[in-house]
Length: 82
Image 1 (tube, rainbow, N blue to C red):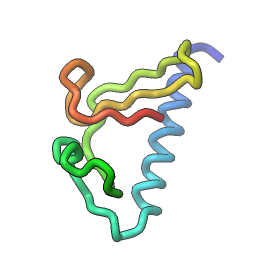
Image 2 (cartoon, rainbow, N blue to C red; image 1 turned 135 degrees about the vertical axis):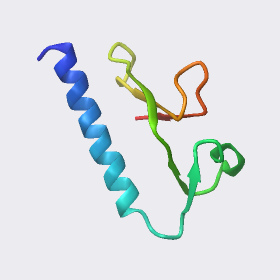
Image 3 (cartoon, one colour; image 1 turned 45 degrees about the horizontal axis):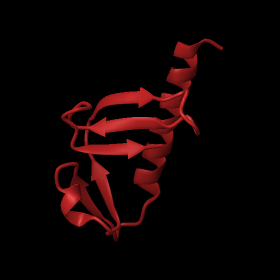
Image 4 (spheres, rainbow, N blue to C red; image 1 turned 135 degrees about the horizontal axis):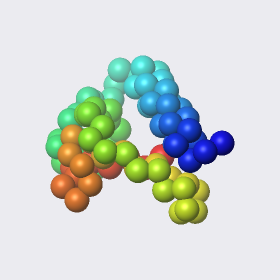
């Protein structure tokens, strides 16, 4: 499997999992924007935003994927690590 196909499969899987988590979560959690999230550390909430950039770190232990919401890396507001 080539690198591009592997990355697309991984990102597709992540979108599925994030979508499932957003719909399966209880209604008790607050819904926040990426900018609001920093004021709610330690709380349970759903953070919503547009994925501005994504990086699949295949050579890093665990092969994490970084999703930056609302703004790209270096000017990012909120980063999800999967």
